[in-house]
Image (cartoon, rainbow, N blue to C red; front, side, top):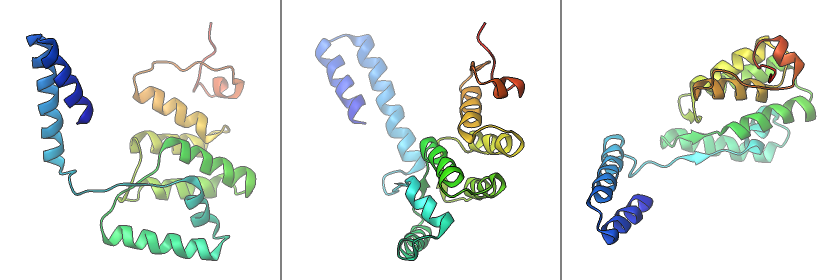
Length: 175
């Protein structure tokens, strides 16, 4: 909203009617979208990797109790939780490298997260497709997430020098 207000004021100062109309429409759309989805009272809380690691590994009882209390309160108060792609990739790396969790355990946890109603991702479809590829494939989760995200954003190909991904026909060698 602030950004649109700045551009709108700038357009007014420039006294260019066309610019004022463009930013005025964008400003109205922004307000209308917010009103329809009622974001005014809603909060969203982002989760970092270490929160999810504690939840999976249960290696620190004190922190686990804190996390479970927080999650219970978030669910009771209908507060959505957000996990970004970087956190997902870090989570997989930590569980695989640091804790030596097997791939199927990691994939199962990711799958459970992706089907939890209160948890949001930049795009759940992208995450779910990446999880399915990760279960079947031999490469890192981050590679499959990159592929599915690029595909969702309209990329017809993703180039890489990773021979295993090229063999899986996920990525392509630049020519």
